[in-house]
Length: 331
Image 1 (tube, rainbow, N blue to C red):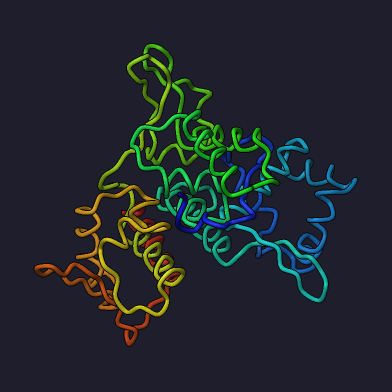
Image 2 (cartoon, rainbow, N blue to C red):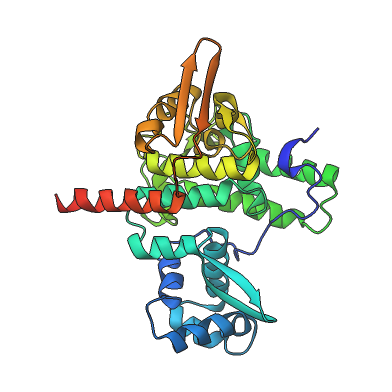
């Protein structure tokens, strides 16, 4: 029996990507289009006309702006929205599209997605919210086996569709989303175990959180990589922890390590980090956050608490991480 956030969810999110995974340069194109530093009048026109152009005859203007075809324009918009970079704001009955505060942060500090920190953040946005991409959320938060295949994932979701009565979700859409998941996070290898050059479709494959492998019958399967995640720095981990806490336990002043590691939408689930590695990270947060988070590790009690008297801004925290990365480059 299905439990958790997907239980009784009658509006799952499938399709919309036009069968394309998020490609290199796509989010940059969208952020450039809504560049907050351009002429104010130009930006206003773009925010107010984007949605109309997308479904009207003037879509050709967007195709020219982005340098891609109609389907790819739709896909760029889809991935930009699902990654939290753009969103729709309805004000005074006007439907406006533009950069979110998160999108502005990324555009300011890493518009070309050069830093792995940014890729981890985008992964967090895609897989920590059950309303963003159902197949992605299910794979990272529900799937218990380390080994995973397209067919097994699709069959699991099709069974849930039947149980939950997801009547608006077509079987083929669910299967395509499962395919997109693996094209997003993995690169393909040939029989000699050499990576195919044209398989680098999506920047999130650089996270190495899912790897292509083969089973005993030589069929292509995939494996979640569980562990420390050395390329995930504690600034991003702390941002995810803060968001997880606010979204799921807003009234609690403490969280156990079990919740942070094993709960739906938790950093442990989404980043595929083991409990020991979570504990090691939590022990470092008090110094990193100037005492906002405090780790307690005593017999029978492993938890972290929030000191609300210490000011903490997750956005400013991320800005600090980018500044440190840029200092390292200069040095």
